[in-house]
Image 1 (cartoon, rainbow, N blue to C red):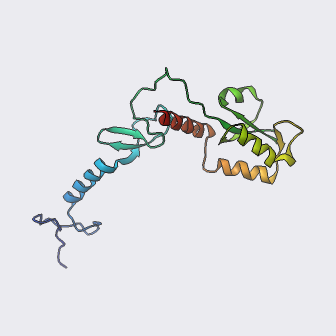
Image 2 (cartoon, rainbow, N blue to C red):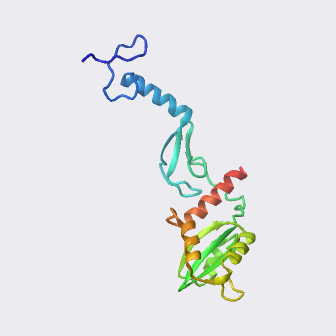
Image 3 (cartoon, helix red, strand yellow):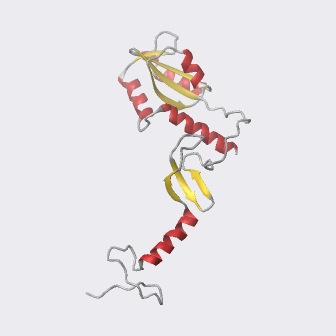
Length: 183
């Protein structure tokens, strides 16, 4: 069986049998390096992003960017800027009831509300909260923000929580995205 030779003119090196294209290992490495300079390489950040906590980054010749919020790794967070307003609808469980509320400062709000578990966050303000109150009106306790658990409400919360290990990490991502949009 003849040895396959690198298709780069004048190279003459052999090609590995499992090479994706008929070029030698050296030319594959040159191509990979060139692609990394133009497209970046997704990899773990050297340390968690200081803005959103993500570990996923993109390595460029000029440095690292967080793959989630695009914060340049190593840059300080400007503490003089006020944090952006990120409104969320939150879902709290207490015993067999679920509270649907909203806040622009969920850490402070949830610290003031007795609950067993934070189930999920949903981006949105009072309009989204009111829509959810109407959506689950049959389960609502009077005019409160507390609802009886039902198949429909549990399914809605499960859909919001799907793939989210920690709702606070999701909130951090939304906040970092708002900071990145602000510039």
